[in-house]
Length: 393
Image 1: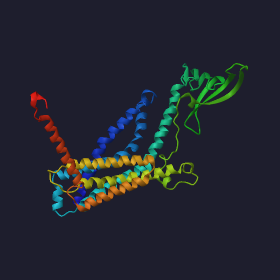
Image 2: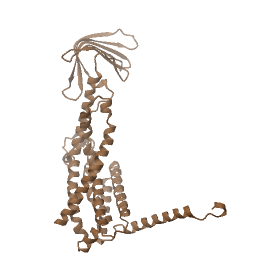
Image 3: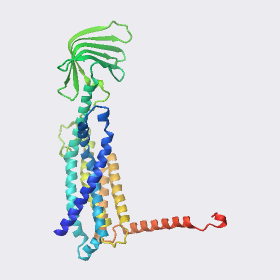
Image 4: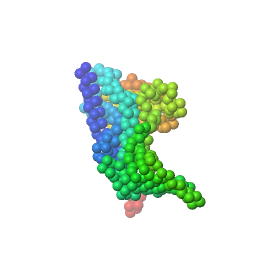
């Protein structure tokens, strides 16, 4: 048990360190891209932090498997560099026994990825859309300001003369030229900005005013209509108002696994629901496959003179290839190919571990090392070769 705790603790500590190193950098890169919430849309730094923080679970779903693979490689390289793998092998401990604490650490990571995939990531996407919609709605408060003529899309002009202590607008003027054949002008004594009951958008309630409509060609006289109340959806005052929608990515895992019969999305886009369901499953399988790849390449005992970094480079390129293939099959919706690729990787790595070779990819690593030495030798020959005839080759 002491051996298991030692390896298990080393893996988790390395995983936490890698996560603390990578995640803030990637999150800051994304957050800087959303800084226009503060500079252009007048949001506070706290609102900016909350909105960008909900993007973190989406990033973690991709970062965690790769970070865990790097942590495993770091632990195995450390054990190899300090000859601990040689001592473990000399003590009669088989590779399968060494794999047990690594599987325990992998189970923790799989549980974390499963929680993110099943619940936290869909929840984060919902909250992200909701907060972005609130930001767009809050933008209305900055657009509608007394004493300013505000033009949206060049054909809708809004103006308010002043604002009362209770928040109501006075002397509201709206010029609407969006219709190519009709020109409308609204004059109202008062205007009140309220939130709609069935959406996040705000409604401008105009009272005690007139609506004047006239054909653009001027053939007919203007029609003037007096009204006691007139409601206008203020989402038309901004160019884009994000809507909170329920797509496949916003659904929880159990909603994808057991869709309701009256689910509109399941009726209209069943292939999208099925594709998202398989994506959630494959997301939890990546840590297991990455574990086998890393252990097959670095888990066998070797001397300190062996080229560990060549094996690490091959393992890393294999994992990168598998992840790219996952993105490709996700776009092409060929999930059977992804399952087949994962099964092939696992079978090959288990065969390598069972043979307990000095290097999981010994022949590939050896070829890589030899080719690198040949390139270096050729470069030295080109640099120091004999130059007869006055320095000309």
